[in-house]
Amino acid sequence: MNESNAAPLSRRKLLSAAVPGLGSGLPRLYLRGASKQDASAEPRDVLVHVLLRGGMDGLTTCVPHGDPHLYTARPTLAIAPPGSSGGALDLDGFFGLAPAAAPLLTPWGNGHLAIVHAAGSPDPTRSHFEAFARMELGIPLQPLGSVSSGWLARHLQVTPALGAGPLRAAALVDVMPMTLAQAPQTLPIPDLSNYAFPGAPVTAALRESLIAGMYAGAAAPLSAIALDTIGTIHLLDLIDFANYAPAPGANYPAGSELAAGLRQSAALIKADVGLECVMLELGGWDLHSQLGPLNGVMALLLDELCRSLEAFYLDMLSDIDRVVVVVMSEFGRRVAENGSAGLDHGHGNAMLLLGGHIAGGQVHGTWPGLAPAALDHGDVAITTDYRDVVGEVLAKRLGNTALAQVFPNHTVVFPGVVV
Image (cartoon, rainbow, N blue to C red; front, side):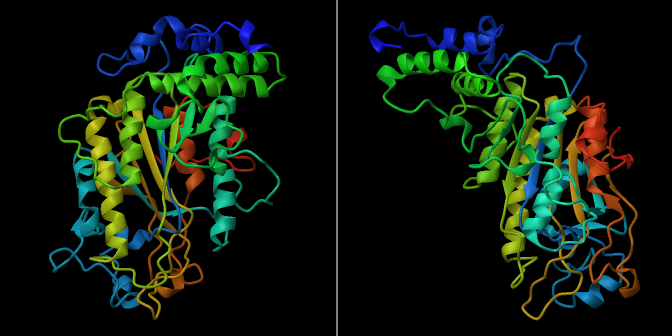
């Protein structure tokens, strides 16, 4: 096609061409006054999935202060019982939160936060890379290579889209995580406010028109991916992320990429553009030395994570019935501290779930105990499979009716974390 003969498409026309039926509704994409989900449609939550890469220590985050074996195994690193200096913030008489996790008391007190302890992947690996792969692909205890798509991608593949928009899911990272590998209408976008068509603005419309025309006739799935990408560029351009005003009381911590991502996620969810899932990550948890549960690295990470989650919760409080947050790590850390004031790779861990339809204000799961005979090779034994937790969320809140395709060779047993 000759550029001189091509009529440039306006942004509205380009998005309308890429996403039939959406063009007439574009003004509603601006914040303040955004429309809600169609009342006649099946109610479905937006899933916000936060993956803590590196192996977060669940025994520091959610302290089993009622288990005396914790203090035998961790004479210097265990968070002290409630009432002590720097002690745990009691939740139920047995479990408590680390002081750095205090912001979680806000959703906990409102019944919107649940913790599942002794949870995780039953796969025995303690390798970060193997654990990531099997957890994100949804195939613990199964050979790598048996599937190539992520568990959340398969959920989107077998579940009808909420609307006609170009973006069903987004990963706010540079590279698509395995969890969303092969997901339809899904893009990795590290900064939603800065996702623009490259090149000089003066020729952008013309170049976009040429590219859209070129890919419109391409074979699937290339055609749809290209048009969805172009559509998403303009979709995000219509949302004023820079001037987005969070709800009163929602104070996202400055300087945190996670907080910035959750703030942008809140703006995107409130815009009601058909988003179904958003994935974020927070790394740095691989603390083999100098754990610092009260005033070191672990405390700083927990502070960032929990203040960010509290801010997102307060920001979405008026819409909390249509949001569910799932926070998990690839594995936990060993029960016993090592000689470097740190913790080595472990197994069982704590998962966090937040939302309006979560059975909150309680710690779920069967506690296996920390007595030496109860441990799994020195680690917290897993009594709740993470696939059962996220499977219940998918089935009860995200409209999934084909969990066997999401988690092959596994029968999901609902642990009762969703109401």
